Length: 273
Ligand SMILES: [Zn+2]
Image (cartoon, rainbow, N blue to C red; front, side):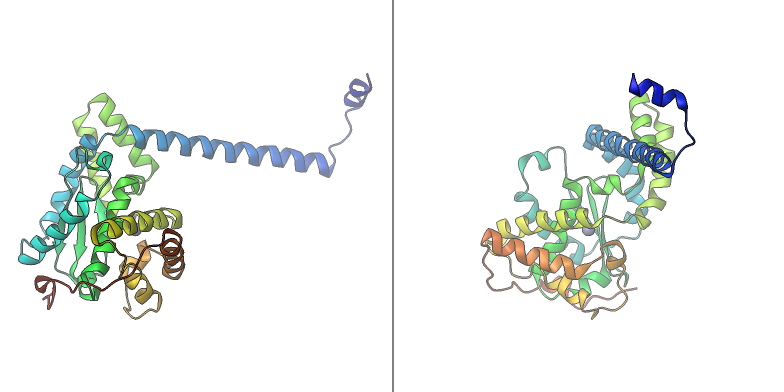
């Protein structure tokens, strides 16, 4: 009864009541975003590699045109093959990864839908050992494993791709691919996505060499700012933190550090555009 008499009095809303309302409203908004995120994760889970490859077939040629079929690219693919052998079996299914080498001074690497990793000449020039490069390739494979390269396209595009796939609308997929090309260049990954890709790369590095020398070299160097204008850092932020996290992981897992393998000759003295 007390409750009832209280509510029928209908007092003017106090600050406290307004705060509760505001809290409920904010909670609702957070809930909606949470559900949306959950839905997007679900969508990513059900987009099979085959659809990704269809998307890739439209996206990859844009980069393929600029790629250089050269001894450098061949060597990069041989290195990638060695890492691929160490992938967990569920990560190999329906996949055939390859490297596209772009001989420009951009310091960057990226994962494209359709199993292609783009490596720019500027990034290769920064490499001082094979191990350092393998860590970066392993990191990119980590983005594929966690499907970050799809997430990076953004929610709207993902929904369009999923819809086109389920309706069987080839034209829809094609127009989504066109938008994807623009989105790929700008996609940024979150710090946790980067750290997870680093962890994935570290595991592959260890399984390939039996030790993890060179794992932090590139990030340590770029966190000191030695390499100057680095695009890789705009898409791959917070290098210092990544070095610390990797070092912790190496210690925790008891990974050894042995001698670095020198960079293959075909990756040295590159001529860039
Ligand atoms: Zn990354």
